Amino acid sequence: MLAAIFFYVLVTGSHCGSLAVSQNIPGPGSESVDFGTRCNGHCFSRMKTVMDFVAVNQDRWNTCQEITTNVTRADQNQIQIQLTSLQDAVTNVRASQEFQNGKLDRMDSQQIAMQESLRNIIPQNFVDMLSRSEAHLIAIESKLQTMQTILDNKLRALEGKLSSFIRKVIPPVFQLIGKRYFYIEERNEKTWVAANSTCREMGGYLASIKNEEEWSLLSGKLKDRTFYWLGIHEQLTRSNFVSVASDKEVPFFNWKPGEPLYVDDSMHCVLINSGLMHVDPCNKESFLFICQADDEVKIL
Ligand SMILES: *[C@@H]1O[C@H](CO)[C@@H](O)[C@H](O)[C@H]1NC(C)=O
Ligand SMILES: *[C@@H]1O[C@H](CO)[C@@H](O)[C@H](O)[C@H]1NC(C)=O
Image (cartoon, rainbow, N blue to C red):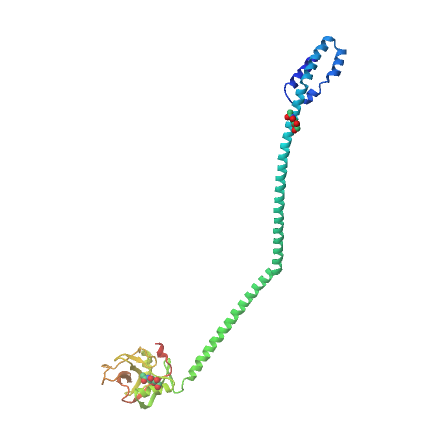
């Protein structure tokens, strides 16, 4: 028993800490009485030694306890400071988080407001309206197509009427020979220049011949061995024969062999006799002549 107590004292006294153990050791006064009555003298004297040791070291132990307490307090202070700064940090984080939350809330409410105003701007049945408009458009398009067809037909009818009207406008003295209308003067002989003017006054032109078919049909209508002026002349240069209706080159000739035969240096106009063509001065001799109603020669 004694050995055990001694061991405890040595262990706990040799270093600071384990204050709980040293406090559990019974106080010297009561111990000595107790031990004194229970042990014999030898036991007490040995116990006394231990008690002295404890008394001697009591101050040191207290000091050690104080240091430990001071250190613990310092540590606690340190920990307290760290805790405080940690709490500050947490508070800061919380504050900034709350700030962010506030921002987010404001953004949310702004977005909601925008959605509201958009909802107000765009009618609820917008999609319905769109599809209805599309259907309308399709209907209108098909109506337009129908109208287009009707208009096309009307236009074609109008064109037909117009062309028959134009035919009626052609003076009655003109006759259809082949595909065009001609007037053949059988009585009054004129110079080429006068005949040209007369055809213009009748609403036509002194005539040219487009092709062999027309030449053949027209020649069949003319008196044999008789000269008729045609609307063909040398406008600027010798042998450069042009249509008086178009001022363009004439596409068809059927010259008498040896023609064009120039009798003088004046410009020459073209005659037809028994289907064959000659040249003659435009303002000297008078002959019969042929007019054409159209200016179709222009587009040849
Ligand atoms: C413990 O702290 C107190 C007050 O700060 C001081 O007076 C005392 O000397 C310190 N003790 C030791 C052992 O440092
Ligand atoms: C044909 O007659 C028209 C009308 O009189 C006239 O303007 C034109 O200059 C004449 N052409 C020639 C080549 O004489």
